[in-house]
Length: 289
Image (cartoon, rainbow, N blue to C red; front, side, top):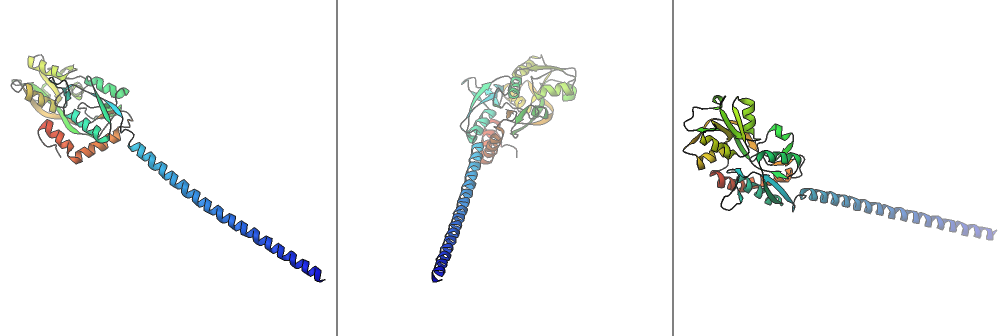
């Protein structure tokens, strides 16, 4: 009887010990598993955050260090023109896009062409950037992208000093020159009954006007004023109101990755005073507020 009791006691103790060990291992295993889950979660979360940060950084700097082609004109003073002495491109637009590129961290290479060819180049994506006193219009925005505006302009008539033409209402039936592919050519065709002649280079229109082969020229105000001041102050004048005030913008092919960084750089150089410095260099006054 005593032996049976002893055996039963030993068996009971053994079972109790086994149960205790099993529970301890289970608790330990559960505890270890929980720590591993927490560590993995923290690791994953940290990894995802790092990846998102890296992606954002890559997107912000995707254009930095790259070289982009800039299509421009060589005959639109004072915005862009070829200096006859140095054979280098100069002008307000040239300085502006150079400052924007420097601020955004990319390099640029210029290529000159006729204005209507420039717009076609933006539509086909042949060049990365276009700058040439390009007016932002709803029609153009259907096929190309624009930066924020950087200059406010409009159209003005130039006529000989002894002309009887006093405004746009007087040009019906007259020979009027404009630049090929420009908003001035479009305005004349859509709003007047003038005999319109379109020129690849606007200087040719001014020369024809001085020679008496045209009765008037309609073109962008700053260029008309600049040409008269520099070359024809004794023979030409401006008349009438400024028409179709339209801002200039930097052009890009549709969905270009450059629009946002260029806008950011443009805003920065305006805030820093660099834009005002360039404006005063070419126009002699502070930019309008």
